[in-house]
Image (cartoon, rainbow, N blue to C red; front, top):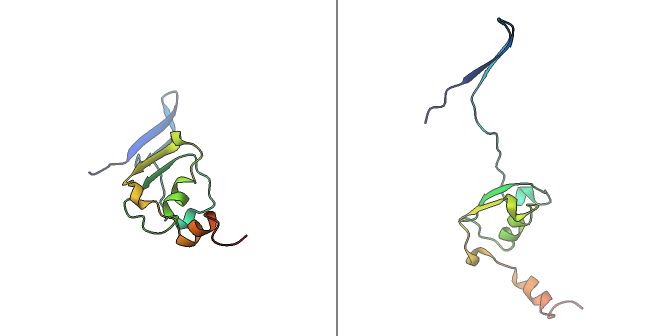
Length: 96
């Protein structure tokens, strides 16, 4: 799809006071799951189809403030993985 610039003008009476052109796109940015650890987001659109490591899905989903702002694709419960040592800790087999 080819998107052409749109032009806007600010008029005062019949006189153009300002004019600008821009490509009408919604600005967005993408980062890897690990790069945005610690961030808090109002909205998150994430594709979890390539999540592979322990804790990756948790890190991705725990960044968004509410479920209203969460849009996921590629989700499968098999993607949710905890490190074996973490599981042992919570089962009381490590530490104390």
